[in-house]
Length: 182
Image 1: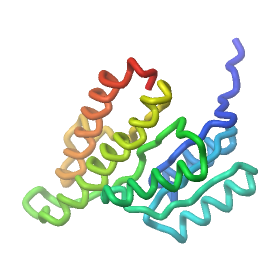
Image 2 (image 1 turned 90 degrees about the horizontal axis):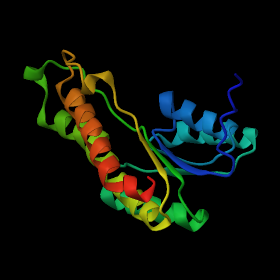
Image 3 (image 1 turned 90 degrees about the vertical axis):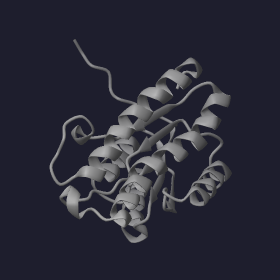
Image 4 (image 1 turned 45 degrees about the vertical axis):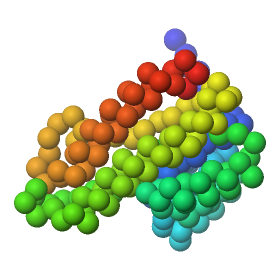
């Protein structure tokens, strides 16, 4: 049996955390598969390197330096995307931070940063994109979670809580938005 080639020809995809790591690799695979990309990260210099690689692949892309934990920046991001492209077909929520502290040492600042980026940002960006996808009655939202959301990991209390939250949000959005082909 021959497996058909993975294609995203002409699709418009937002990838958060696209400057490096998993997000960068997702963006490159999507570009090789024919998608046009919106690359989002707070690391602007590294983000530009990813954008140049996508340029070499020959796909249209837009780089947006943004902190997704800030809802004002999410609104700006959506405005910029819709000014450049006529729609959003795919959202990959990949941006995230990891803590590595015993639970007795986690500060309020560390907890808030982890939950704000990993969970709050993912939710409010999904909400903003979801509104457009609901109008179009189609779209894909891919949330990157972790085994830490299911299996307890020592020294990762905030990270594990955020990833468990992502799993729950993903299930909830699937129930609410599935009827819109999202």
